[in-house]
Length: 263
Length: 128
Image 1 (cartoon, each protein chain N blue to C red):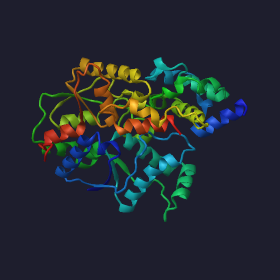
Image 2 (cartoon, helix red, strand yellow):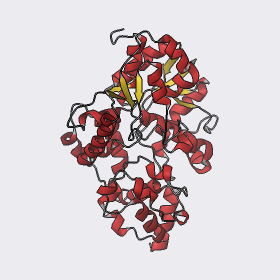
Image 3 (cartoon, chains in turn blue, red):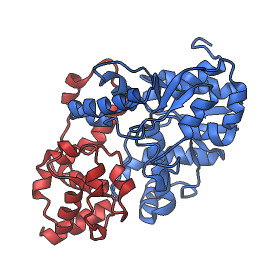
Image 4 (cartoon, rainbow over the protein chains, first blue to last red):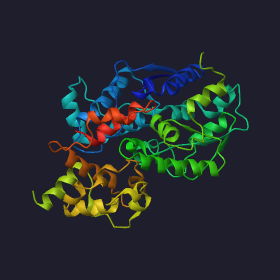
C-alpha cells in the first residue's frame, strides 16, 4: 500500500522521533509513505468560521495532490489529521466553501473532497491489522503498563472525525495490547491537555496537565503515549512534577518491532 | 449595526443556529476552561442570539476557549458553542489593531521544547 504522507511543521523539527519512527515502522510493515512535495503548514487549528477560505487552502492543496496520485492521504500528527480531515469534509459537504476554494485554486478539475484522509493509527488498525502487528513484534513490551492519551483532536467532533467512540475509545489500547504491553484505561484519557493555551495562560495548561497526570498515575500507568506533539509538550513541559514519562506511540512501536533509533 | 444585525452576522460566520439551544448547560458543564471563564459557553450561545456581544468582546473568555470540541461533541441539540466563541473572537480581532498576539511577544514566550504547532495555532487563534 502506498500513501501520500503529510508530516506537518512540527514533525520536521521538535517531533522528529514521531516522524522517523513512523517511517521505519511502516517500511517494516510493508507500507510505503511518500512525502507530499512542497506541503504547506495546515495552520495547527481547524478554521471553524464559515467565511474563512484562505486558511483552508494549504490543506486543500495537500488533499488535491493526493487525489492526483490516486492515493489516500496519511497523517501522523493529531492536529494535522484534525485540520485536513475537517477541511476535506467541508470540501465534500459545504457547497459555499467548496465553490469559493475552487474559484481561488482554479484547478483543471474542481476538488470536492474525493481524497480519503487516514491517520497512521487507523492505518495500523484497518489496513495492516493489529493481529499482523502482534505477529511482527520481536520484543514484546511485557509487564509495561501504558496509558493511551487520546486528547481531543483525533476524536472530536466524532461526526466528522469518525476515529473511534469519542467517549470510550479503544484503538490505542488495542495498539498497546498488540505490542505485548498492558493498556491502562484512566478517566481523563480523552480530556484536553490545554493545547495552544500554553501560549496564553500557562497556568491553565498546567492545571489541565496535573489533572490528567494524576488520573493516569492513580489508575496505575507507568507511562503515557500520544500522537500529538503539542500534547507531548504540555504533558512533559507543563508537568512541574515531571513524574510520568510520555512517548510518541511510534517510539513504542519501533521498540516492539526491534527497530533502533540508529537503524 | 444594531443587535439583531450583529446576531445575524455571528450566525453567518459560525454557521450555528443559537435558537436550537435548550439551555441545559451541558456545554459549560463539560468545558475544561470553565473555571477561567467570566462568560461560559452556554452564555456565549445566549448572547449571540440576542446580539449583545459588546461585553463578550472585551472579556478574556474569548481567548480562553481551548478548541477541544467537548461542548460540540456533547451538546444534545447540535448547537456547536465552540463555533460561536470562535466567531465572536474573530469579530474582535478582525478589527483594526485588535490582534491579541503579535510577533514581537513571541521571543519572550519561547523555551527549548516548544513545538512549532503551538506557535502557528496561537497565531491562527489570536491574530489576523
